[in-house]
Every structure is written in structure tokens, then in C-alpha cells.
Image 1 (cartoon, rainbow, N blue to C red):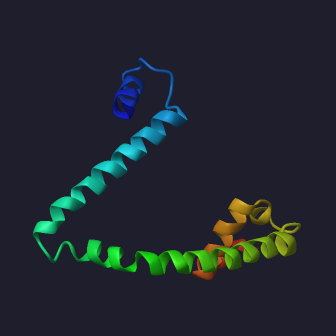
Image 2: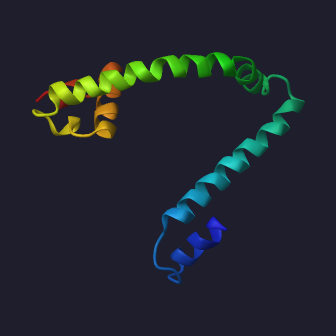
Length: 113
């Protein structure tokens, strides 16, 4: 359905991409890729990633549940401390992106100019 909507856009029949068509297109791509994983079962070396994710899913979910409050507090602290001085710390979304980049050592100089 989303591919048909995007084709009407390409040929000038539609107005523009709507959020609905983008979501449908993204979900369609995800479903196609997820469906391809069943073919990996036939060759054990390719199926290793799927087995690893299956066995480690609960541990990863527990880790994410324990890290989300800490990272949220880190972001709120960034908004309070740096918000008045830098445009990158005005809202929660941009603060989370900036602080995650700083944790990884990216773009440090440009952030604090």
C-alpha cells in the first residue's frame, strides 16, 4: 500500500508523502527483512545472530529497563545545566542526541563553542 502511495507521488498523481505512507513503507520494509530471517535457519552460520538474539533478549530488556531512568536523569540534568547557554539543550530530544554523541566522543568541540 505504501509503495503505491509513493509511486503516485513520483508520477505527480499525489500531493506529497504523508506520515501514514511513510509509516506503512517503513513497516513494509521491516516485515520484508524480518521475513527473510526464516531462510537463515537452513545454514547454521547465518542463523547464529538470530539464536544469539533469542537467548539474550531478556537480559537486554532488563539492561534497558535499568539504564533508561539513568539516561533520562542525565538528559534532564543536561537541560537544567546547559539549557540557558546552548541551543542543543533546549528540549529533551536534542539534549538526548547531544549527550549520547558526547558520551561517544563525537562533536565535543562544536557543542561547547
